[in-house]
Amino acid sequence: MDYGSACPVDARVIETMQPFMETAGNPSSIISWGLAAKKALEDAREKVAALIGVDNPREVVFTGGATESNNIAILSGAGSLKDKGNHIIVSAIEHVSILNPCKELMKHGFEVSIIPVNDQGVVDIEGIEKAITDKTVLISVMYANGEIGTIQSIRKIGELAVQNKKMFHVDATAACGKIPVDVTADHIDILTVSSNDMAGPQGAGALYIKRGIKLDPVMFGGGQERGVRSGTENIAGIAGMGKAAEISMNDMKENAIYTSGLRDKLLDGLASKVSDCYITGSRTDRLPNHASVRFSYIEGESITLNLDMMGVAAASGSACTSHTLKASHVLIALGLKHEEAHGSVVLTLSRSNTEEDVDYIIDVLPGIVERLRMMSPLTP
Ligand code: PMP
Image 1 (cartoon, rainbow, N blue to C red):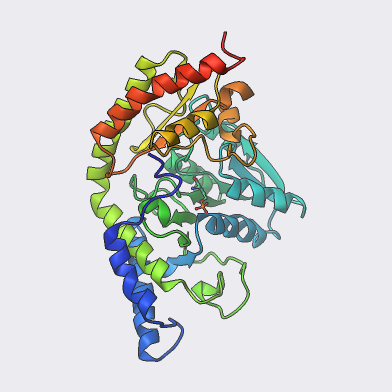
Image 2: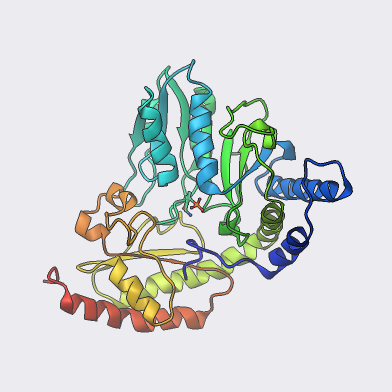
């Protein structure tokens, strides 16, 4: 139940990728192997474009993943407009691959407004409106948060960006393939898409860049991918991402109905069986496959390690990793105290999960929580 951290690649995706790992064709080459690679590249571009409501596949460029797409969006998006202004607006719960490039730009004279969220992780749209100035060049807000599952009212923020003539970037890493994303209807100028989050391979991603927007390159070289991201494309990975986009588009509705049933059973089951267990994020505007809770007095890491020993993969939150042991900035932004933020567990589902899986978690987790609470000095 950790599909949001790393998703196994769909068998149909592996089948699509296989020929491009066995034959070597460079899509920039004019020989037949190159043309075959070029065709695979353009097929994948069409499929990713279709998933996000884009008519012209040329508006999609491939990258090495979501972090890279987000870095390009912030560094090149704001950087290419530096003559017009030096102000960026982001939400407080953006992924670090948005927040850290913003910090980098601050070293070069940019100012960043970080807009708060409410206790369910919903971004304060009025706060965005008030923060916009003549110097604002970019607004970046995520479609859905990978740690708490909350979905934002992206269309309303897009309308605000249009009214104020500001560039609008959306990180749709956790949303694409799970819920409908339509860049045209949502007034999005730049959009981040991740392959692995849709059961495609790791190491591939994409960026929708609306026609007319010229981003400065981040890689300098042969000029591939509209000159934004030079370097020979990862054809097998991209072909896989295209197939994953096609599958998730076709299966989106069915998957959402299936996983949201499991998600609700999981959330209700845990909240009713364990005392001092609280759902994090929004109950209503929530990714269909996403369940996240927090348990008072104990640490999410201890819970996930105990679940691991019982054969369950889960996460404790994306920023709060075993490497840093820092409380997650997302949970702190919800208004939680540090000790409350430490007790978080994130369970992300897919079509492969069953009712039995959910029953198993509801069965074993209360015992794990009870044991850890008995050992915790924080337990009253
Ligand atoms: N954005 C969001 C919303 C995420 O949840 C993540 C992590 N899956 C990323 C960006 C970065 O993804 P990656 O580590 O695959 O580059």
